[in-house]
Figure (cartoon, rainbow, N blue to C red):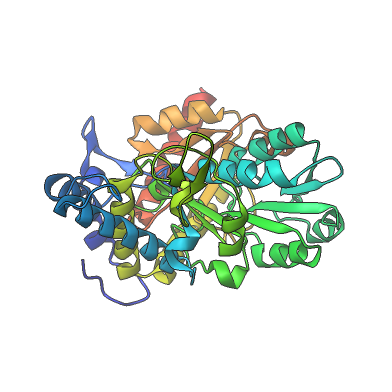
Length: 415
């Protein structure tokens, strides 16, 4: 796909790559604004998956026949491509394929945390963590006796970095922070958090599920020890996630899963492990998904990550302004000109689930609920919120349709 290399995206051209966006419900064309949950997949990525199954479907690292060799090369090169995409100079040895960000978080928590954490140790999270991070480290703390602490979120939706400096101490062993909040849209200073962690000989895990899809990310510039993201949020397939880890840390960690593919030698008495990253990819891996995710990276980079970021942020700012004009809408998180590409909100007198249902009647797809951030919603004093989230194929006109649907919901509940 060729796109004009200007500041603005050729959105109409991009939308041609996503036939699902042409779907209609009761004669009304779909407006898809649930991209923080899952983005749509372009034809180029779908064709890559089909090409794998049509032409070289075989297991990797297990056969010397032509199909297995072709599949193995494509799968290994996919690791290199994803490592390059996020700035990991260690290439495939620092890029583990998992199911999703959640599994990546669990891999580090159990492969590293069970061995390294104990009573008196501390794990520091943020109050805006996704359950993938919060629940995982919370439960690991219960297993190991480590204390879990939280960096507070201020009333504007930003992290209290003064509190962070106080909370991260010599007892801290791990800091786990979301790069971009999936509820507030806050873009966190993860590089600064990494510096604080490293000043106390602690490690940092960054949840990049809402960052890698829509902005340039350089894990080495951040100095992240671990960084995770998911394919289905970045125009790729479901069922695959990525875990970047510094090579020396991954080498020191024991495997999280055992079985085929991840072993070097097995006897009845003991086993030894394969080289990185394969020692963390037990069993038949996510071959088709991995190759397709590399194709998604090609697609995104052809458009330009900086341009995708600007497009998303402009849409979020426009949605923030339009919804603010409504007067009875509460929007959560930072100002419109200082957030990632999503807006979470509530309309006075209308429950978020009811709002989402009525908006759906207008063929506008948004999210309603706690967005896997229940404790954050408790802090905000609301049970749920509606969330509109944007991607490279969305338009200002679609934001206008969302606002029109919200107006109809308001009028319905005013009766």
